[in-house]
Length: 426
Image 1 (cartoon, one colour):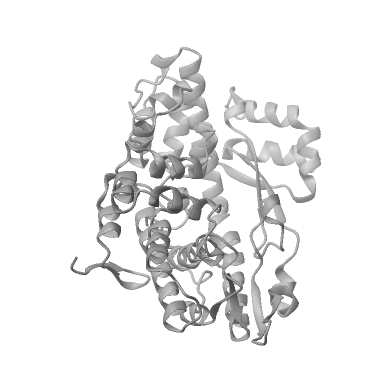
Image 2: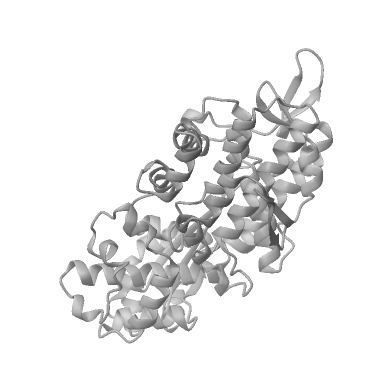
């Protein structure tokens, strides 16, 4: 096919010459990602954070193609053309299962987005499956295994999809930083890619990549605390979660008239029914936002208030707990009464303890325990090559490779903040 070029604000021109990749991009399942924001509710904190999973997925595809060409052109790895093509498809499709507001909807449905990735690629009714199987009947299962980590081919291919230094993180740090208008997530992408090599079938960095790795890991650390865990973002997520919880409670208790409107795409979730693949693929953030706008005028005052808070950015106030966490547990009933006294009789929808934790570099945990392989640095090209784990050769990385730092914040309406503070300070 002729070259098709996407103009991207992060990577410049993203070139597509593989007909299967282009067909995947054009599929309804992938186009749906245009209607799902990459950062969920972060647009509340950063007005520019309107970029989508579609743009991010294109970026991850581009970086996978770029890294594989780097490894192949420099003779650092022998990559079968079929594996190269499958890895690029896997990079493109790694987020195909995300729903509206991503991780929040995982709580609501009880199904993780990775499961939807498997279903979208494996189900014969999916256009994605049909395109992959049309290229090669074995591709759907092979590509799924690459994304899910059970790939039995060259390990470095699945590590480029998901590891401590993968193309997914490379793109989202730079993209999220750019679109939010901050510099926290910036690092030298070109230098990092130039120092990637393959040793024993696994991804490693040369010694010249140590500073690039440090920069990359620090970028991740600062992006988590300053963007992903931003207090305003966590507050509006709490409002959204409580609002959807109220809608669910109303529907499942038979009070559907109190909603005033039930969008067809949300009906199975609100009723607690198992969603079919077709129903899931029909759901995006357009449906949720429209429902919230309608619910701002709902007969139920709690649903109406929470919906109006979301639409008009009337956030809950965050009360930092720090060492006062035990007081919240001990004085739970008093806090609930303070919220009720502030004008919110159904207080369960108006207070929430938010827990956030972060560590820039998770130290090695065996894969069977759910961890990612560590970042390895090639310190000697001898026979056999000598590898060392990055924290053993980097003071900076060792300094930030600590136990996760956890922050607790109690979110309540502003009308109840002072009363709650008095209870916590007493």
